[in-house]
Image (tube, rainbow, N blue to C red; front, side, top):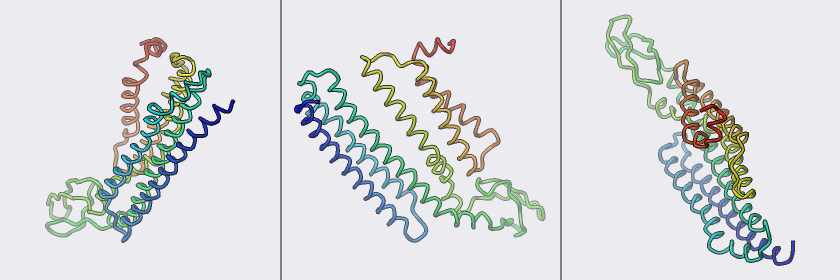
Length: 272
């Protein structure tokens, strides 16, 4: 690599480093904010969700500056040297950092939300252990579910009761999604890296079509993701016996319809 290339890369790396540092400081700000909002043992999950959404939008805007700066100020400096493949070096670094910063945020967000719900579990468990009573005669009743609103007939007076989940149980119900998202996030990150690698191979090869084997690998990763998500979600909630199979099928049907089925070569390979 000659001196001109080295100088351009050093300036580009310095800019990317500043973006990475700013990303880290915003995530630390979010960490401290969520900790403050969770004090007292009864976190306001709606407020925390709004705060995390706002932070996520700030970080998305920050990541957008990478490609905006590349297109407006940097790409021409790489192409001006007229060295084959050198532009790809700068673009690859930009895309790699963008994905890395997104991964760091999603990892932080999912773990943070799951931790909030873990802190709420003792209150929900205590509420779940409370006896249910008939509203008419106060005799104990055994509703089909304490997580969903259900009807239950009293064995003593035959009154029909509407059994509504306790407030602490209702507040805890989104935990099933939070735990499932946290557990499956490593697979989602693997999918994102797979897609970036596939796009990069295509670009380096003059935007050649993605190999069928790569599309199949993508589909396999998606299946792993939704299987993991559904299993963890089902373990936490009050779901039917076919919940996992039905959820996985619906998500994979949507994935195939809007992703790989658009590739005619994949369709032919599947006999479609």
